[in-house]
Image (cartoon, rainbow, N blue to C red; front, side, top):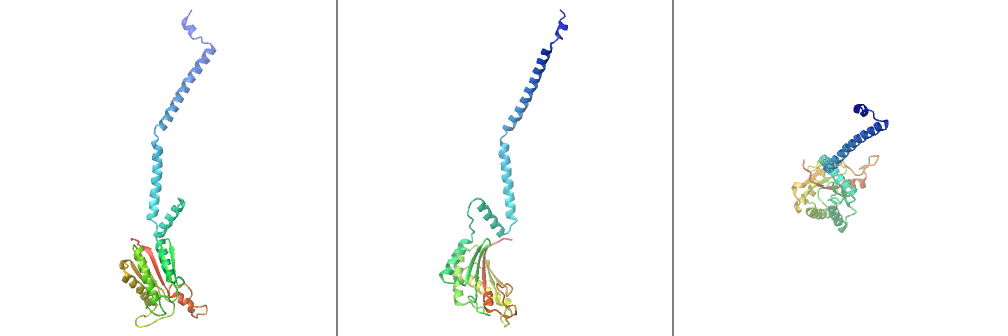
Length: 250
């Protein structure tokens, strides 16, 4: 028998079995490569933590940029939004100041003539009518002088770190005297009178500001459509406004 001639005479079934066996070998190799890849991914779990950390850092730096580029009022609005989103209750640092001022004003029965407003950027105290000054006068009325002293004492205790801006406002009646040539001087002197009492009581003069705005910011029209003066409106416009705000650095 010729050995080499017999060796090359495989039956069709033998050829088919050999092909299947060869395919199984390639399949096993493919599965092995896939398992190696899967094993490689799961063998480096730190990548997931690293990605989380980078995401958090990105969010942190975005938040820092927003704070740096915002005004004080915008910063407070951001704090309020974040607090409410987290399910908390946001309280401004001015709320305690406003509450103490409101209580004192009610205690001395002046809440119908003086109002306190609390906002994100500070506290505003607004007088009405002739409580502080008579028309054309720069002398504080006795009741107003006592109130200013009480306000100063509260501010010393609770708002020592804030700047205090006092605005003087007049009606549109012209004034012309050797001491007070116009409403600009009148409003400035009124604001200065209040600031001077604040300083005398003990507030830091470096955090006090006096502004005279004359009749440029009325809360009500000084005159009717025919140009006649409206006395009640003019009384409302003769007012003092005290702003209590956070000290801002340039």
